Image (cartoon, rainbow, N blue to C red):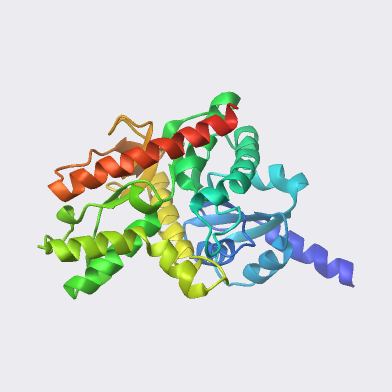
Length: 332
């Protein structure tokens, strides 16, 4: 009887879901991966959801598969199932890796997460080279260049399809600015450019929508809080993890924008860390227009005030080092 019911479940899951897109989450059993998987199962644009991890993915899959939404969920466990997890996928979201712990810098994460991202991107190059990749694994400023080098070596690199997820910086900026202005965060839009760590995170508070005038003190306070948002959560959790729930929310918000772009919706614009000619650096986060092939247009920075121009120079200096570090990890 046990065997029969298992077979029934497998058959049931294997039948196609709604019209939509095939999405894989790589690192689906982790602190970001689990809430991310749950939120993606709720997205009506997802028809098939593949959940991969090196541990615990069968349990997460069983749990999430009971949700009465249309996406068909399949689980994959361990390196030997990575290729099956990736084959035929249209979007691959990568939260895999270790999280920050108190006292750990993003650079401390580098050596562990760099190797993980390299292996996963080799799998993507082989099994779904045309997928749009949403890379969350930190440090994003270095892991995106690592992914680029892996894809280049495999001959599959398309800069439009490799997107570093900086959406959490935007989500935080919208929230913190709304608090100061006494507005609903959903009505606020703050462009955040640069990178995804410390001073490389540059909120363009002069370009906030709706237009507003912030005092120099408010600008300083908000910029610092947005830059240190990750540390604020790491310290508050006191050793029990980093920003996982807000990160999952931001990742889903960004993935949903990618899905709407794939569907052909017009005017889908979000910030992301992409191959860029906006500055002299090879990668930079700015607003991009998302479409059927990924980031179809990368927007310029627009007018900056003096405070932002100074911040931009600081951001570029640190970003250059992080990008170089990622590239040399593959070419060492």
